[in-house]
Length: 502
View 1: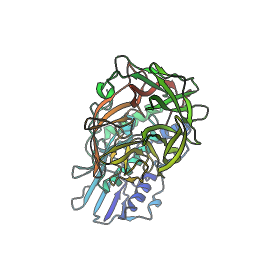
View 2: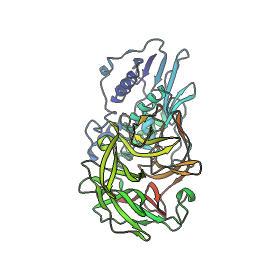
View 3: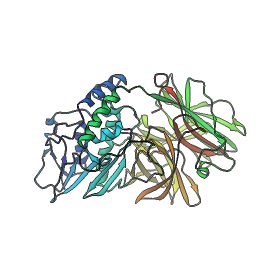
């Protein structure tokens, strides 16, 4: 197939080179159409990006892990020939291709084309819906996201990276849709972008004004994470779909650390809670555990697994009479399986389930005669939370095979796991992170309606936010065992006094 990529020749970025490389890996013949398009972001955005770089200590060419927003010379496209007169498919990033004799895929953000539309959504606080359309019919769609809310440059680069993921996924027929949500992204959010073509003149001027405003509002707060617990009394959040009237008790910390990602397990009659234990002095987390009695924690959490890299999300489960753990170790680029030899400690590595992948919050479930592993993957850069990948295996030890439709979902509102998948009757209920406002801002409960080698579909039925019964601005994880239920989230602290988790 002959594919032509339509991009604005006045603003060639590293993103375009990355996209072309990923498309070339599919084996198609590529060309570029680099005529000026006038769809770029206002010049004032460069000042905003430079100020963010200085204030947040970013490398001068953008974030070190991406750099996709970096401008590159037009000559960087020399390996790709100019677009032929009649390519088989045009991927239009500018919104100005109007061919009738050729297939055209228009890439839009909240209904408008061009990187100015993407930046406008970011600065308006939206999580933009990216769509690839052919003749008005959606080929693929995804809600784009970032863990760097409040930093326009980082968000811009994350969403460019996921745009590349979405385009590549569309070539294989994946990521066709995103699930409906039971409530708007955020109350009082600005109206959607115009639906036709490129960003309009009025909207473009509004974007320029918003950039100037953003330059004066670069100071914001960061969370200090905390774990909440309660006795369920027979009704958990999967039943209530709301915070319990009794509220939550907090697992205390000493101020030099915080606790997050609670995973309880009832083993040999003893309830034990495993947590991410983030130590400010070290700048990384270990896995700690604390036993629970009828009235709550018995003592304070003690370390059980400490490695040279950051650990979190201690997914623990019992199988074959032993306790196993799959902690998040995306900092090491692996998903590893551990076995307890002296529970709750004595963890030894049994296997590497996945390698060479930046996978977040690996969650295992047995279903339909197979084991399934859910995780969000930092696919080609971008956010850690918006691209859901699946693997299947005959046994939890592996070998694990990637799903043929990966990523099965691109959605910052419901892709990232938020705890164990539970079975209620014939239903699989999946806690998910709603990161539209920011990382881990709200907790969703999704019902998996379809899961096999053909694909995965889910319906988000409930979204729980922090409030009077759980203070702060985050609600992030949900797990239960032994008649106790656990969540986590955050209070509010100045960024210069507390570090963020991700």
